[in-house]
Length: 393
Image: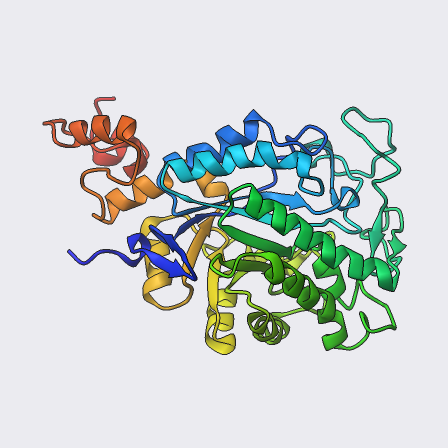
């Protein structure tokens, strides 16, 4: 049998991914004053053990005022390096490549955690530290929603300084042992705010024209690439459609400019500028709803892309790659549901009969069962025995 593309290696610069299954960065909001905890180690560790080729840690903030809520992970100080290094080392020890996303929330900051309502904070809630340093800043003094307090518009010099903050955090990520870095330019956070004609109403060189609104994203990429090792890949996540004036054509034009700055992969997501987007809600009801963005940018900007968004099944992920719609497939909520998704997908595609994708404490026992006379299949194949016409439950 021909090896599925999903489980074929991919070389990007000097880094080899053992397969094309990526764990997308997912906020955990479980840090303590910016420090990663055992939660983060266990969370990313189980995905590495489950067979993923690349595990990207959540959006880690480049400045204190970049935190969106209580529990964000930070990398604005060297003190944060050891805890993150522990996570990177564990990911790599189990055969995956360790990645990290760097971000800044901009005007979407000082909010309670999503499961606590995502409401503006007062400053006296549990877990808050350095409230004065956690200032709400953005390209323009335009609030995210009608209920959000207005942010302070950044000065020209502050914008340049923030781009440098990304490079400083990138150097720390390298010191911590990460081999892939992703710049978060999506979901209505700071870089996306600069791109957006709704959030960015500046009249200087960072606002107005499309190229001016792209300037900050390009400068961040330039600053990061200057310190990020030449043999390590650089990704950028974009909201390729935000239903508010930034869409796929704009994303293609930006991707071409980012490629010239040394960005290797565009991670193609959507949404985030508006508090609620009805059209995005409709799109998100479908499998692989963001894959068309990855396909368009890959074809028109001549850059590698990563597809994400309701990629649920092994054959679905394989088809995305076989059809040339993306170079990588990323999973988020589905891999929370099943942290061993890569191992499961490899079995379904016939790519790993001996369970070599996972560590020996897993592969030995699972391989032994697979070679036994057991009549059944793992639970992920069917909803239950009734699915097989067996009424003896």
